[in-house]
Amino acid sequence: MLLPHLNAAFRRTTALALAIFMLLPSWAQDAQQTAQPAASQPPQTPQPQQFVLKDYSKPRSHFPNPIGPYMPRYVEERRGRARTREQP
Image (cartoon, rainbow, N blue to C red; front, side, top):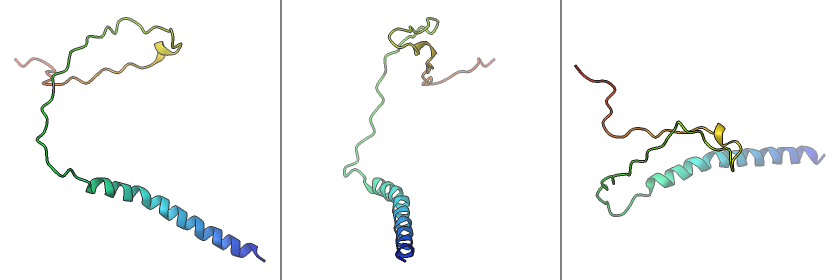
């Protein structure tokens, strides 16, 4: 006889917990958006970066990482003005 009451209480508790867990991410996003700096600072100018030339013709070594040669290599995106082809 006690089981139907426990089942209903469990369902209510589960529904309340699900509602809270679904509302928590939106509450965290709202709190993050409302926080703004007190004093506005001028935007910083980008600092020049050193050019690093990587030799992609040489394979990665298998030592000390045995799956190192099979790991992907990522090429950084080109910055600045990109010219795809010459204009006549």
